[in-house]
Amino acid sequence: MTAGWPGLASAQESGPLPQSAQQRVVTTTRLVTVFSELETEWLQGVQQKDSAALERFLDQDFQELSPNVAAPVPREEWQQRALTQELRSFRLRQMAVRSLNEETAVASFVLSESVQSGGALHERNSFVVDVRTRRNGHWFCTGRYVSPVSGVGQSAVGDVKPNGKH
Image 1 (spheres, rainbow, N blue to C red):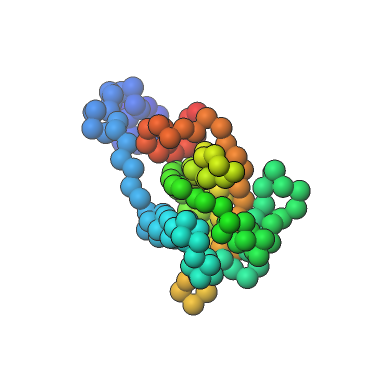
Image 2 (cartoon, one colour):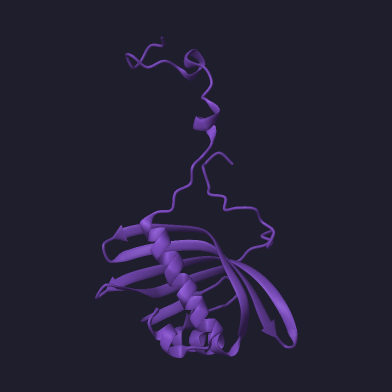
């Protein structure tokens, strides 16, 4: 027994963990489920060029920020751009949600998109952070931060969540 906490043995003294304890079980939180559904519905609205659907997700003060654009993109400009592109497919990965309080949450995820533009199909991967506020029981996106990422392919296996060991 090691000194320190009575009744607790060190990992060396207790031996290796059984194989079943070494496997990590990933569970989806309620907020991850809710926000994954919201993001999917939002992107389906973009795919279907449904401006009414986008109205349900965007706050009046919505803006998008990106390191590739000098100034924040206001809601009207973002919506016009979103509705003129041809979003062929999308995939959300690595969704994480942090509730700051009852009315504010931050969702982050990797978004992979296939967009038809200028006669060619373009694949793009972005790390997205959405700030959402809840009013009257509905979550509205007030701000979106988008940064392109490389090395994220469609063939990526599973979602990898940071564990602080890498």
